[in-house]
Image (cartoon, rainbow, N blue to C red; front, side, top):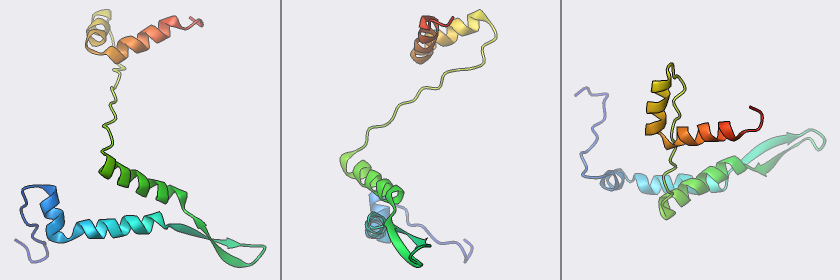
Length: 113
């Protein structure tokens, strides 16, 4: 092992690794900082710096906290195949993909066709 490389201890799960490195408390501290995040903007008229809440950072921290504590459900997405050259290929892909069948049905139901 090179002297510049850091040795990462082997852990049976992520929680043990985080505890060994004291990363959980550091992560919590950073999330708490994010909940208090502000942007500093120069007010031209008053000629002073003003602090405003950084809602994007705060929202991200809240989402992380809720995902960890309340167990955010996995968002399921299905990718619809785009390149189809034959009718048989379209049938095979539609048979395998309920999302593709739904998209084709919506397309056929449109009144603009």
